[in-house]
Length: 117
Image 1: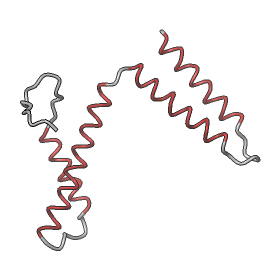
Image 2: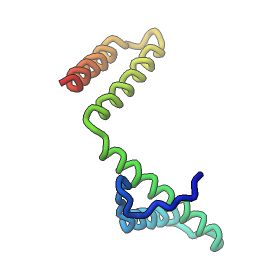
Image 3: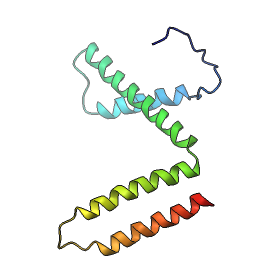
Image 4: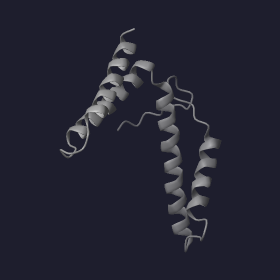
């Protein structure tokens, strides 16, 4: 890992609303401890640290989702549908699979035509 300092105003760095992240962390903390409080200060810090980490992960995930292009979203959906087709193949013999398989294949076909346009 390099020791170079990256300034907060570096180009390409996403901007996060730190106030909203902190509010989410406090909301998660209060939700987790609605009926009681942690036993000591160390447990409180550890619990809030976990909530803050979760809030940052949520913010980063939402930023990544916002940056995705329409083609990338369609490709992700095709991957999900392909996995669902594999799950359909693993169903027991007596379960009906034809209708589900056709619906998924039709959606994959539709997504394939939208990405080509």
